[in-house]
Image 1 (cartoon, rainbow, N blue to C red):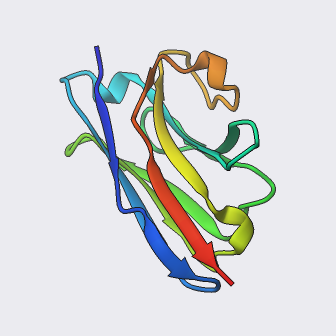
Image 2 (cartoon, rainbow, N blue to C red):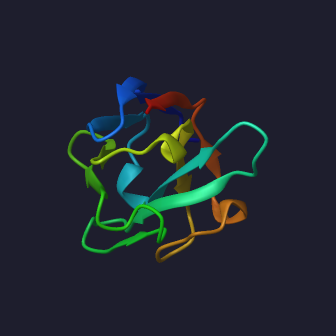
Length: 124
């Protein structure tokens, strides 16, 4: 069992940056691929970024590529999402998720554990 808690959300102006953190419980954090997803009001949840178990590989949605960076620290059971040049379209609840499936997963169905989410609001 893994429990995930996100933090770092808030209200920012367009063009600014924000760093989300996700803290995981348990001693098997390094056994999970990690991902960030987001869901805007009235829209379906969408993939944002994923990082492999060791942190050596990452993948991004086209909409955030070049602006967002995902990373992890297995010594601290944490995964992070550095978001730069934020746009109003980035406004959403951001969720951290853990997957037992090997590799970088972009489908939410392949994730086993989810956090409660943190709100990010970008004003124009």
